[in-house]
Each structure stands twice: as C-alpha cells, then as structure tokens.
Amino acid sequence: MIIVSENLRPYLESKLKVALSEHAVFIGRLRPDFTIWGVVGLDSFTQFDCEIFMAGEPGWVSRRLCKAVFAYPFTQLGKTRVTGRVDAADTKTLDIDKRLGFKVEGRLRNALGDRDIIVVGMLRSECRWI
Image (tube, rainbow, N blue to C red; front, side, top):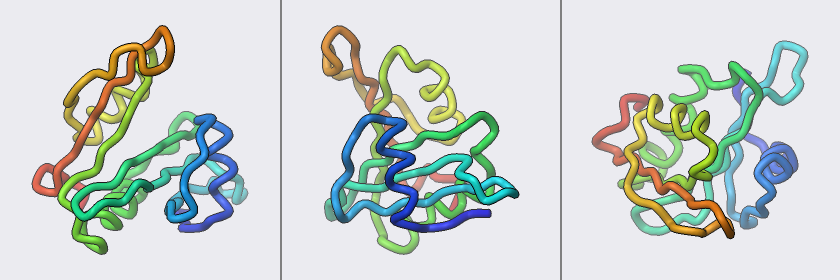
C-alpha cells in the first residue's frame, strides 16, 4: 500500500539522521501488515527543483511507488528536476538511484567529514515514471 502522510517523517529522519523542513512531503510503502517498508521524502522546494530523500528495507521500491513519488514533483507541482544526495560509500543506494533514472551530476568532496557526497539528478524529460 502506498500512502502520503506526515506520520512517515520519524522513520525517514531516523534512518537518514536528518531533519527535514516542515514543508516536506512523505510518501511511503507499507507492508501487508501495515508496517513501514520504506519512505521517500521530498523537501527543499524551489521554483524548478526539489530534493529527494529515501530509506527503506530490502524490496521496498516498486513501480507503483515510483509512479506516486515522481508524479508529485513532476506532474502535480510542475518541477523541472529532482535532486538527491548520496553518501559516496553507499554504493547500494547509488545503484538504486541510477536504476530509477537518476544521473550522477557531481561530487561534494569531504561533505561528510572524511567521505564524499554524490549529487544525482533527474529531469522531468528523463523520468520514465510519469
């Protein structure tokens, strides 16, 4: 089941150890027993862009979830792009992002102290989910 709820905030923020703004939107996938399987947060909205944050348990990403997630910024809000940041050491998440259609756009050196952050982006024109 796919839901949009502020109640998903604690899961995502605790997994990623971040605090998103009060304007963040949370889209999640629940297991059949209604426990949280994974959550996407969209935040830092500008005229053309928003930032995406993702965390979940193995197998949580589905086509239905991707359609819901990318319809919000691209179709509903009319954004041109979505931007993500990934710990360079987290090759699993970077691989998922690439399979979703994100392109690697840059590297923020030592942004996590002794580790880099990889910046990924997806343009509306590149999104296969909408």
